[in-house]
Image (cartoon, rainbow, N blue to C red):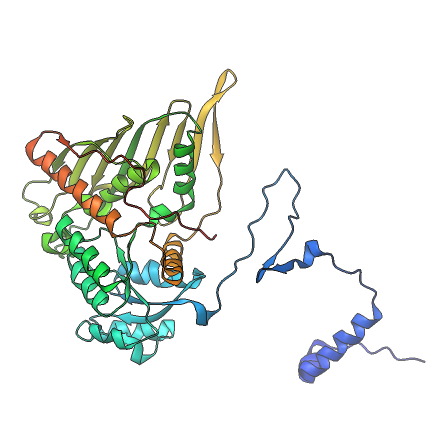
Length: 430
């Protein structure tokens, strides 16, 4: 009688890899599997793995697989400051980067620096405090820094990074004034390093699609826009840097209202020719002794497109924009959030009005902007959002504050060219 041997799971595991390979090999040789086709296996072209579309025409094709650079070819970044934004968003985003890598950390807190370095595998010699920051010049692994300090410190650390020969990606707002912005641009120009401002919305998939609709006049002329960015701040007796003018430069306007301002400019490529504004702060509230709580402002553009914008630290979280075209309305909840953007297009559908929900693949906005900066460093290109883009927003915010102070509209010098303060469009990798 012939015994049939059936290997147990324990036996295979005890036998190790060799036994397992032998078992699989003998089994494979006993089977006549059909040969796979290129639809399933894909192929390598120009150093990338590519697959043919496997879906029927009724479905959108799947995105191509990521094609990250090998680690040794990626641009090394030092993240300067380990506050909420760095720890909650920016450091995790490096895991999704394809052109950049995290190589160093800078913090004034030794305990936080040690813990974070262990979490992200950063060696002790690549950890710096603010006193030793200038010594990054001797670290060739660091090619760029991402400055995530309070606004009032951006100029100092941009100038110090430039003096160390490192490229600079700086959080928005760029700084606290247009004069400081100009000094940052001059310092980076003199050091021949790149300066990019981290306007993540200009790298977000839904807002990029919206800009395409605007510029292609997909729904006719853009007539108006309503943009709201509001959130609350705790009233618990604990001071925040956002309430100190020297560190923040202002209140809700430069912090969150800037998204409304910059997005209106980026969607159209135009620059405002007139602003009107009013602002309000609760009387006697110590949080607003130096900065404002609420600002409402209107921007008029050369095409007579009008953007009505509202920002506040006093209203429940809402980050919404609606665009009114001649032939459609586009509604975007969560427009300025880190994730969760939505877009619904309302337009005529025969004798009725129909709403179409557009579904795009969400991307990590922070990874997209970091990779764009890495591309610019590797390829010696001007960033899409250079220092000039940040300085223009400061010029406009100063006009908004002036209008709110005087109660009168402020006229601005016309700018003829579209995207006058931006570099070439970015390649966004999903």
